[in-house]
Image (tube, rainbow, N blue to C red; front, side, top):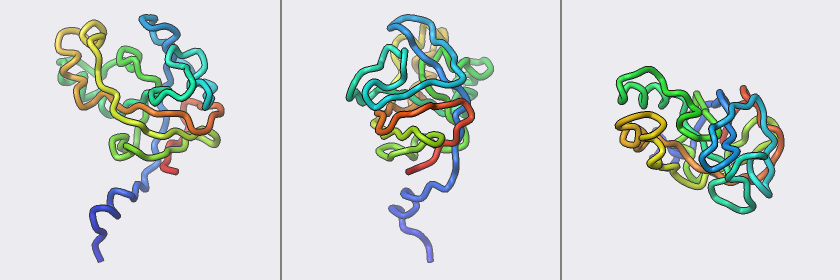
Length: 160
């Protein structure tokens, strides 16, 4: 018997992987790549300028596979994830299918996906002419920390 649409939307059997972690220490500061970062429900990613209690944008995520698409739209190779100013690059699982869902990263961290992470005007500055338009629809998602812990590059990403 075929699944109905609701059943198909609720089933996400794939596991993703954290390919890259970046911290934005200040509003216009360069993004710093990290191999691991501590995450708290009280403040999000430690040392990130969006660290604050209760924000729906404590963590930003972007699909690794979209970095190549964005680059192609700009007539170049895959874009450097630091230029997108997102915290996590995730591969192997469709992030857009996770909207409104809780996800687990590694053994400890749990995030609630809160919405789209739309590109800002900085994308023109970072990616060049057309950077904003190239990122439209591919900018990733925002999340709030439900449970903190140590988040590492290579950690598995799954639906809770």
